[in-house]
Length: 255
Image 1 (cartoon, rainbow, N blue to C red):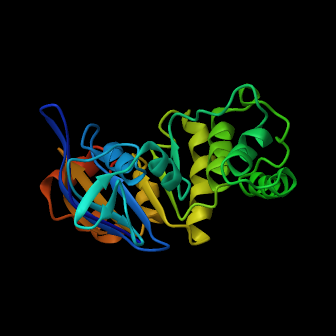
Image 2: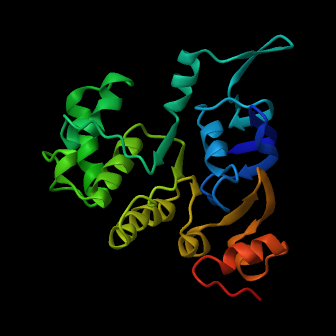
């Protein structure tokens, strides 16, 4: 579904992505792990057309992200073209960004009504189903300030799903939560994976990556240093940096 080929990105003299290539198949849960500052979030933002990149190509189905080919010339997307593309890709980050002055239900129906042109009645019915799916069936009329951090994050997931995305991106979705709230959000993500949602998950939750991820890419200094099935990466890592990283997280013992 998604093909990333030789993507590089620099901010000034800082090269944050360095010749990155990877594939994401339809229905796959692709986890991306690695130390902070290794380029994981920047890669995710490139997948969602929130950040441009200097070289390489990213293709979702038949759409080349960030550029339109006109003849033999690649023209950078306009802001409108990028916004239209983002309808197809859901993004949930550690920063929930719910509208504080609107109820949970109003947050979820905002995109379908204002962007997709869905009638309010249809959007409300769909939102009700989604809120039940993420365990918030009784929170329609609550405001974000009345929710726990985990509930806010689940509402954000429902809001992203309301746009019927082809793929869901999760950027450290649980990193800002208290430990006791992490499991409820990971549970929703695991349920989405079981339903066949294509997901790209940047995470420090190693157990989730090992148990739910189909494939895992390990990033270091803007490069992918290891890429394989979750079982291989966690049980038989080939790169010493991967071994060291896993030892530093959750006491993993590799073969």
